[in-house]
Every structure is written in C-alpha cells, then in structure tokens.
Amino acid sequence: MDKIDNVHPGSKWVFDGEVAGCFANMLERSIPDYRSMRSLVEEIGNDYIRAGTAVIDIGCSTGLAVEPFIRRYGDSCRFLLIDNAPAMAETCKERFADCAGHVNVICGDVWNATLPKRSASLILSVLSLQFMPTAYRLAIIKTVYDSLAGGGAFVFVEKIAGTDLDDEMVKLYYDMKRQNGYSDDQIMSKRRSLENVLSPLTPAWNEDMLRAAGFGKVEMFWRCLNFCGWVAVK
Image (cartoon, rainbow, N blue to C red; front, side, top):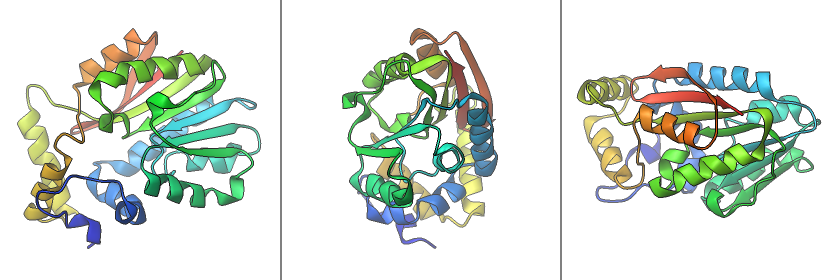
C-alpha cells in the first residue's frame, strides 16, 4: 500500500512530493476504467496534433497525459506544460529532462499564464480543472479556445457531480476503490481531505462552459461512473 493512501485525519489534500512519487499508481487505483480513458485521450490527440504547432497541458501534474505526445511529436511541436504544485512541476521537468529544447514546464497558476494565441493544435486538461476555482473555469476555457488554431482540439477529462443517481454512482465508485485495495477509512479520509479542494460540476455545466467559451463542436467521448471526458473542437 502506498504511503500516500493513508491521509491524515483532518488534513487537506496537497500535491506534494509524496503524491508525485506514487501518482501513476494512485490514479490507476482511483479512476474507474483508467487505462481506457488514457488510451482514448492519446488516440483523439493524435487525430488533431499538427507539425509546427503548440501542444499545451494545463494542470500537467507529473506529465503522464502529455508524455505519449512528447515522445511521438517532440521534434515537430512545441510543448507548454503548466502546473501550480512545485513538486508536480519538478517531477514533470525531470521526466522530460531529455526534451528540454522543445518542452517548457511552468510552475504557476494557469489563469496567470500567458498562452500563445491561435497556435495550438491540441490542449489537454486531464483531471485538472476540477481543482481550480469554479469562478475561474469559464475564463480558463475561453483562454484555451483563444489559444487553439482553427480545427484544434481541447481534450477535457473531469470528475463530475452526479444528478438523479449520484448516490448510486458514488456507491459503485467506492466499491471499485475497495476492490483496488483501499480500506473504508482510507476512502473516507481521502474524501474529507478533498472537500473544498476538488469541486466537481455536472456534465451539463461543463458542456455549457465549453459552448459558452466558443466551441461549436463538443462531444463526450468517455464516461465511467462519476468521471467524464470531452473533446471540443474549434
């Protein structure tokens, strides 16, 4: 069992060095249908990346989501990776130390970052926007839209708030975590630590924000329990 699975009672969730060290394992055990989601993100991204353009990952964490694209397109694209957690950004820099010439990792808040205008073919936000202030999210998505070139795609994966059957979705989610080795105490401690840190929105709210930002083509490409993925094309 990873040390990070034992969240101290009453403590708030922090993306520190402990989390960075076991992040991949933690995601695989905590996100339902995780491998399918990752595979679809990669497959969709490959359909939109164009040589000579920028690829941006907002909330890049340790670089897991963007890594397949850097390894495949590193010589033909410019990569901008942003995360506001120093430990995550540092781990991401170490992961791509051999790609320093075309990968720029920034530690800071995305709403304060300057993104290139109309020059990105692909922008990722994989399990990231849910940790950002709700009041900032539409403005962030508008910035994403402005950064994309025509025909570019925003791939957006989030934990969601349920509606009519939220209790059932949560029950099934916790059952999955138990099957992956989490105890009831660990599940509840993690839930408490994420209160007021992770703020999920309903699928409809997320889709409304994408359309309000300017995206005319929005499609949910993946859903499992209380997690969803969308692709929005400019």
